[in-house]
Image (cartoon, rainbow, N blue to C red):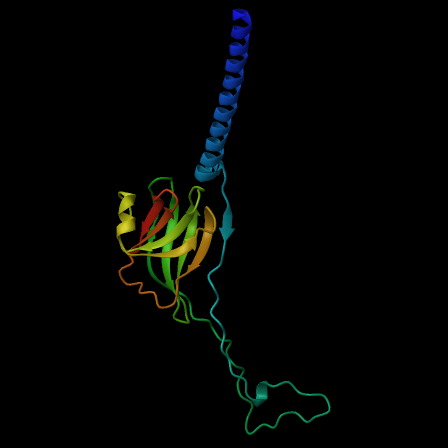
Length: 206
């Protein structure tokens, strides 16, 4: 009788241990999946490149009667005087670089330059040139009122303008600055990892 009871108890213990092991395995697997989704460690080995040109200024040229082509079957446009000289091709206004600076590394090695650019239509954009940084989850491009470099936790306390997700880890990118943004006092550019509140790198705008 005692032997039968012992065997039954042993089987129950084995079954309980198996259940506990299965539950523990599920918990560990869930933790691994959640950690991978949060930290995305594979991004340490990935990169991307994008090369954008500065937006071209629109041409504005008026055309007079002499500029209109002849229509078959109709007389050519009347001329009121001597032939006008050939019009000079319009030259687009060049974008104006208001301030710029070189990136310095913070949480990740980051190089390249940042430029605050005013376009011919009066709008502003941020241009990153020859950028080289690291990939990461939820990396944003910020204009900040605080100086570049140093401890990155300070950027949350200053004024900043979020220009959206970084387009690529390498290359030349343009980021439109929303209309009406007061760019005065925005003295740096920050590559900010929003998920972990760290700066990959920053550049002064001076």
